[in-house]
Image (tube, rainbow, N blue to C red; front, side, top):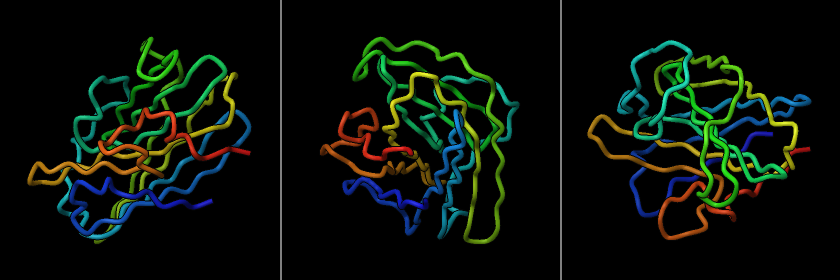
Amino acid sequence: MRLPLVPHPTLSHGGLTLDVEVRRKGHALSLEYGLAGPVEAVRWPVPASRQRTDGLWRTTCLEAFVQTSWGYVEYNLSPSGAWAAYGFDEYRKGMRGHDMSAPLIMTSAAPGHFTMTVDLALPAEVTGAVSLAAVIEGLDGAISYWALVHPSDKPDFHHPDSFVLDLP
């Protein structure tokens, strides 16, 4: 299923649109993010090795949050190839690194369009509720925050009411 992400209403989105194709393949979640519009105005991270890297959310980064029986997992996925995953016991509490294999992040770009695909290993305890999000930084330093829904007046991808997508 292809779902639109919407920018937080308090911030400019620079004429961009963003959607995500979501597929579950057993214990994997396949995501294809599609960004369209003036993508040449986006600050793209410099290509890096496929390694766990903290702080990816400070610039252009695509994200997924998956509820589990013990809390939730946050995935940070950079177009650079770097990634991070964190487990939380509950809303913004008990943060720790989440062990997983490095996901393969593939990107492609054309005038007016950028695509990033990734397959994520889901925890065995996944309950099926997911939140999808993105941080997009412009060349001018402006940051926009995108999600399936924005349940609060400030961007907050961890908000419990952000987990609106039920996986089959």
